[in-house]
Amino acid sequence: MAETDIEWTDATWNPVAGCSIVSAGCTHCYAMEMARRLDAMGIEKYSGLVRRSGNRTIWNGVVREDQAALAIPARWSRPRKIFVNSMSDLFHELVSESFIAQVWEVMENTPRHHYQILTKRPDRMAHVLQSWNKAPLQNVWLGTSVENASVAGRIDMLRGVPASIRFISFEPLIGSVGDVDLRGIDWAIVGGESGRFARPIREAWIDEIHDQCSVAGTAFFFKQWGTWGKDNKKRSKKANGREYRGRVWDQMPNTEQRV
Image (tube, rainbow, N blue to C red; front, side, top):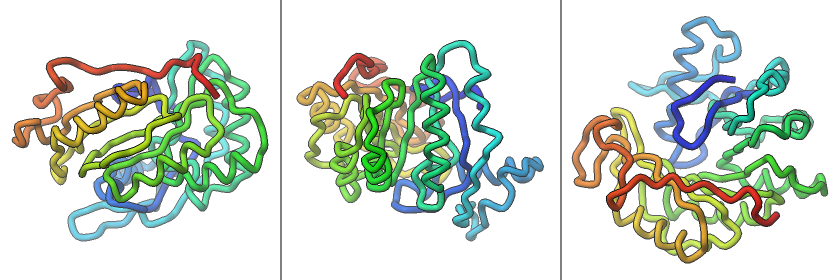
């Protein structure tokens, strides 16, 4: 587990390492290059998870469960918001259901923390959690990524997941998501892509999400413009900043909300 610069969480916890590309939002995933760097530093957990393709680093499909990492959250006495698997996807098809159950046990035994789990595989998330036939953990938030309209169907899949808090990460937002149904969605994170290969974001795409959040009563969090500013100019992420409609949007979900 490590402290993090991610604006909407306090720390990251990675009981799984490695992944594979499933949609356009994965193309420039920061975790692929980070895994390469960690491998180069000799960290065994991240050994052999990526390959080079031209001038890019990409996942090679190897996924590794880390039993030792399961002990980490209990060591943190101060309550934190914890992003689970910033370097993977807990619901990747190669992560065993028995290991997912062990992760759930850790979260159940550390109720002082709030855990945020983000997947691009909400269909498997729904299948696994529905099969358990258990009440949702109140300290676990479950989300999915939606980068454009082609994967907006993930929202309906997420709505079928038993959860105390459901959220959508519209990041990297690389296209319009169109008209989406945000009923039952407690939180939306919106952000542009960063890095030298970043694809542009358009203010109109953010507008449609913001306005639909207002209608649905969904908390709206604008994370960043990323490498491209609202004026369609390329700069550093820091230079482009986080202001949207003249302010910073840091809304968070109501943890007393419905199940």
